Length: 213
Image 1: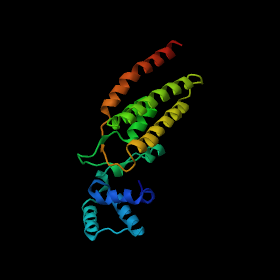
Image 2: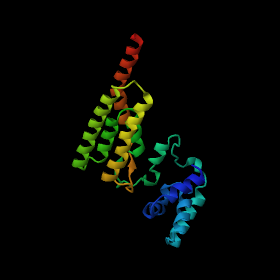
Image 3: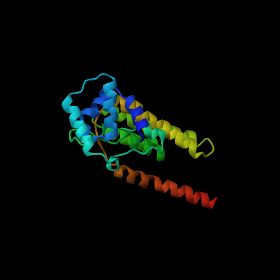
Image 4: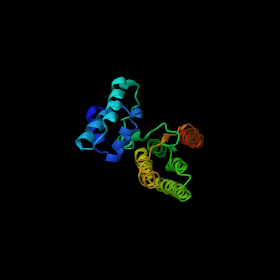
């Protein structure tokens, strides 16, 4: 992400979001930290001299961005779901599937897969867990029924799946997790393997059916 893009992203954050960078500076990219410091200064928000010195020392000792985490920029929707300022190594933080992971699984496979991942994120909340699962089932069934009534169109199918993904990563995430919740990023290998095992027979059936036709 260029400095201009970084600045625009930082400027759109709340004071509380920016404070996360300052309080957990060792976990974030140096260009984000520099932009966050500049933005807080422009908002006349006081930061202790000790904290500023510690951050500047951290930035001075970590000048190579090549080893720092970056997000893919190929998809504007994935870019909107970025949560790099919320990732932490704190063992007390919840272990969650990220918005990006839920969005990708919902679009590439089906929203039911994203809803199961979202439900795992909030399994301690029984009411929310049930709501998310029911939403995933109903949305997937309804979208499949609708898509079967129209000519096959991959782009439109992705749009329908994307709408389900958006509901999961905005409405349900904001309601049961919150946009400012720090969390540890959960690995996606298990749901990926399960999704592939479930979807592969359908893909093969479509391929063989098309060959026979």
